[in-house]
Length: 463
Image (tube, rainbow, N blue to C red; front, top):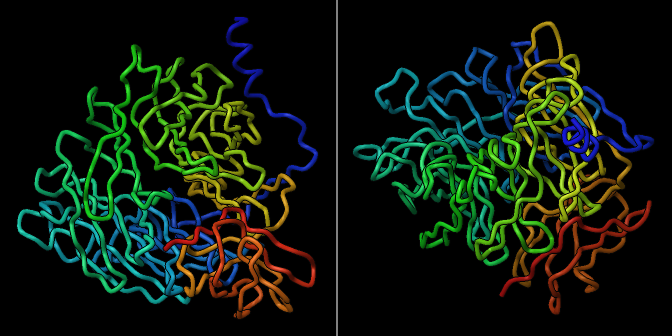
């Protein structure tokens, strides 16, 4: 019993003076059900997301204000896609891009077809950019279950769960106009669910697979934009899977240059892990979740690095109630539970919380919230202050950097690591700045009437 008490103590919430949790919206079926993915902040300061079901029963795209006003932008109808499992990405053209797991023009032997890539404007105009299984034997892939990422080349990159040369899924590149190229087809180096990709500072993309690898329990991989692929780590490589197994979510490259992620199972106690992995493939388990009553358990979501330098995430179950938690963990591995869901305020948070530029975290829970049990959108404040961030956090001298924040009206200065830049205030939540001659990699600051706002991540000046 003393052993279990130690585990619970190490994950117990600490002082809560600055914490405020709010359920912002509850899904009712007509506006969606079962949000599985993280939100994304738009140029307008609002948040955009997807629900796996609802609307006409096959998913929606929605917008929600920081105050909680939710608007359904589109309902999927099979022809334009169905069951959008993944979230959206804000691209440099101001539009949002995403994937629908099923639906579209092409069949794969099932009634719901093979999935799509779509574009949606902030006003809600949806365009199908690509229908998977457009090539013979579905060599272009099908069932895109992961979110997209915009690369430094301006193209989008993503993964599919099935299809490709070996019917084990693919990694693909697609232009903003919808031209798709398959970069890699998985075989025994990764199958089942693939995470979304993250482009690292070295220019390569990193991700995870749910299964396969040396022990069949998932992998971490790297792929260059030209398609050079390498498996960096195979989970369950240590006795008893103490290093974790079956990662469901993608990776985060933190400020220290290492990648951080979660596994849904394995670890010392069987309830999943938080891990760190270097770009060279050396993995360290930072935390193992237990499966006893009261423990947070089964983290499905990726992690977010807050402006305090710590990582933030969720578990899909456990905590003071059996409905999941929000937690924070230091880069050294000290984990603290910040909030336990109780069903009425949400349950089963499968998505990471994002930190908006007002300093507050926002997220979704796939269930709970009302008699319908259809899920919620929530906010969670721990007293962190406002900041600025980027649509893309890298660019060449002379390129236009897109900066998101708040209170931009009346801005008097923008600088890149201390070098002044020409800028244009588009709205109170969005401005652009030209990367100046002499700029070096580092933080961007924006001087507003209410004070100086600093970026949460450095802007990387590339040659």
